[in-house]
Image 1 (cartoon, helix red, strand yellow):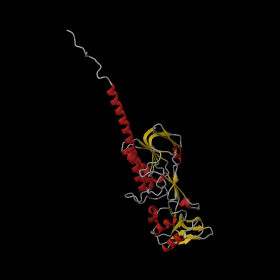
Image 2: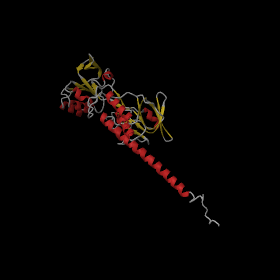
Image 3: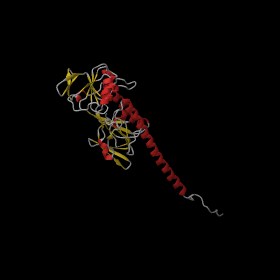
Image 4: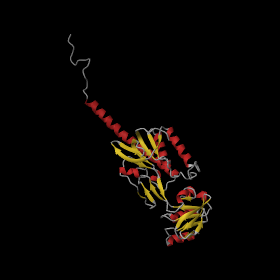
Length: 339
């Protein structure tokens, strides 16, 4: 990411993950000037591979993003290292200021800064995240199939999460932790053969750099090889507050997102969002598709604006021509020539 940051662009894309890069790709192919500001901290960095993405199954996340950056540059786009601190509206667009003091102007913004996973306060979770501490059965489930899997209760979707991982292994244990199941949920877990362990989990047991169990507050250790955790997912969008755009509680109850319509258009004119910043559960493929949709919609919005401006200029020119004298008399007299 060595491209020099210019001052004015048609579009600034904030976030260099799948959503941001695919949005920039669509804009570049539409001959728009576009820059991607990438903080270089993708959510899936700890993962060994991207899964569920057709024709890219198992590709390391860093390799996928490097290919994406190369494709954006192929169509004239810039990719620049940086992180936004504020975004403000100016006369005909927006000015974005970065943490290092640089600023850049654009007519439109595409925000694809992703989210932050807030994990329960259990010793060892952070260091194992994306390895043997997981959240998504579709992203990581195949890799832990038939293992001894634990599910740590921590959110409204934890029982659902246990049911999904039960599809992948006969040995699933539900740790009630600080959120015991309801009677109905307990019946569902029992019916699927999922053991329920009561008591607060205090730490993970790690041996030779692998998870071997969960320690409860009474000292009991329950053997497990993988652990599913429902994180609280919060959009990375604090810099948008200067535009009056703030994260809202997601209807699911498991995090905060930036609301938008199906095309990514927000309530702030000229600002679109794509990927996990608005769709908390989107995998890489869905995030990339949303970025492509938002990029196309931004281009269409710019085309509509440019058409309005062209029509206004055309009318002004026509009106000026209509108001001009029919002739100026140069080189010819309107009177007969005397002989």
